[in-house]
Image (cartoon, rainbow over all chains, first blue to last red; front, side, top):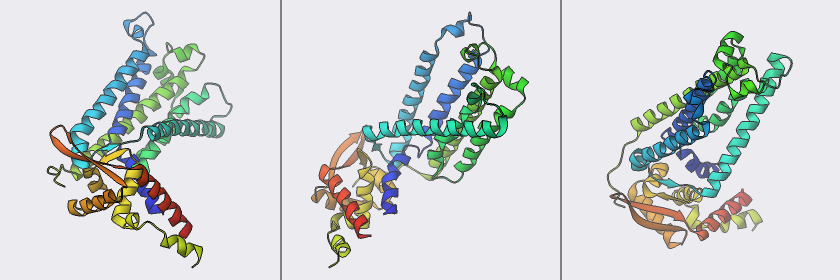
Amino acid sequence: MDRIQELTARPSLYGNIDGSQEFSYGFFFLCFSIWNQVQSHIHESMLWWNITTDSLIVSIAAISYFGIKALKNRVTYRRTGFVEYRKQGKKKLTVLLIAYSLLAAVIGAAICYLLFRGPWRPSSFLSVVALIFPAGYIRLARPTQWKWAIFLLMIATALLTPALPTQLLSAVGGGASPLARMGIYARDIGAFWLASIINSTLIMISGGITFWLYICHTQAPGQESE
Amino acid sequence: MNPQMAALAEIDRVIHEPGRLMIVALLSAVERADFLYLQHETDMNKGTLSSHISRLQEAGYVEVVKTYRGKTPQTLLSLTPSGHEAFEQYRQKLKGAL
């Protein structure tokens, strides 16, 4: 019975067999984090401020989406086959994943601050919200042993980054961020963006390794003749 | 005959065969998949996979569509509604029997 359950779960893992999901998530969040980090250091009158974050997000998402599509068409479907997922299942999985990641991040942040940081500040949550990265990554890490090392590195990044010297974190956080104007300390903003940049990079590296292993261990068969 | 044995006797033999069970279980989780994917996941050779698919097609559990992806021929497979129902019943009966 467990074996049947395992088999029905396999197609959902197939989406990342080539590491493309990891790579695109990592790419998206890395661009987003770097953009926000840069935005925290530039004056509102500069041209960059006028490029809205929304249009940037749409552009990065489009690059990720079409990049994955091209990769799947040219490499994955030719080597290990094509799968079309049920739309309903896909939507349900995304909602569940977001809800689960948020919940894990909130619980992790609360535990971390209760244990290590003493009194709770409204902005405290922000600096360890980067726990959302390992919480989302665990689904991809579960079936592969070496990915657990990346998962642990991501947890360590999310938990240890807020413990870095305040001066360094404040310098990273900057003072021009919209978050700073909302009264959130620059050090918490800095911890968040720094952890986000490191964790996004780790996800991208993990995607790169997965893709390399996939290319090494698979090859395109001859034309189907069944 | 006790109820557990009766449940075992009623199990769908078309699905119960390990090779076909793998195919049906994989297809039950997707909208459709191609022959190459099933071959990769089940590790069966083309001939064995084809014969299992033919058996499932005869039973009305699997629908097969031959098409092209670019210039490459592609065989797309999906589980029919009766295939989904049969697989669900199979799982229930197996669960009851164990």
